[in-house]
Length: 178
Length: 178
Image (cartoon, rainbow over the protein chains, first blue to last red):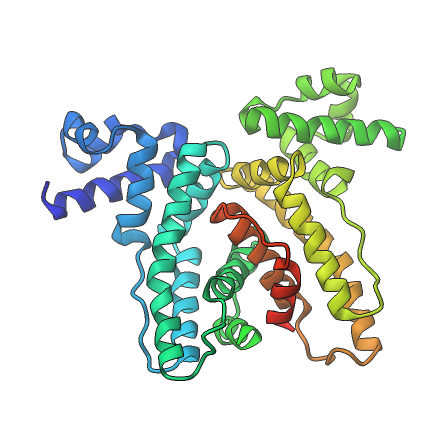
């Protein structure tokens, strides 16, 4: 399958999830919206939960580049700004919230969400590896704990509390943790 | 209405949410489970979303005492341990995840979740007020940002990543932030 068409399938999946909820998401609907045959989609992704789990991790919609600004602080501020941007602007914000909501009642989809976070962490690790290499960060530091704090704070403030993120939110959370 | 009966209504509401999801939660079901007349429940809480929003904040199920150990670090470690306990053990963990999931597709319920976090923060503030009074914390510190980091990290690690919390998770997140 051509990568271009694959991305269309993933985007259709995520848009339908955000617009109609998990119950309203169907492979038939994804086929219609992406212009790809339903049986073709099933051949690659055997269930709706697998398709959605893969789309979360692979689609460009929730993708962010790993920053490389030359400093740990600069990289983390850029990363927090990217994640905060995703979580506060449609369509990515609606997709992320809908996916988390759907995963709450669906163990198969919860695994897809865990896979999403594991994939993103494997990219985020580069920031910490480079910082250790530059002598900016102790090799004993715990990169996952730092990411839990930073990304968790964005979720708490923007999604759970429903409060706006101040313009200086990113440097402030990063400085609180470093 | 007697407070004892009110708590039974709230617990029935939260248990049904965790067991059947938001769609399966009905005021009729709450009435059956709590032994309180359905019309009585409607008189106090005009809709399912309002009842659930109130139950989240008021029920003992998701309640935690504000620690008062004599030090900021001690208070925050105790607080993180309490919240981590709630988010990793049934029934509170199932209730919290189901409530967040349901709020993803329901703006009225999302307001209930925001109210829950605002209520908890009004209690958590005491920890920081006392720390400022003892000269342990600058009056310029941002208590909400500290709580976003700490509570967000628990959600990220335990719920989104689905990973176990190490025994020293609480002191480690607190030391990373203080």
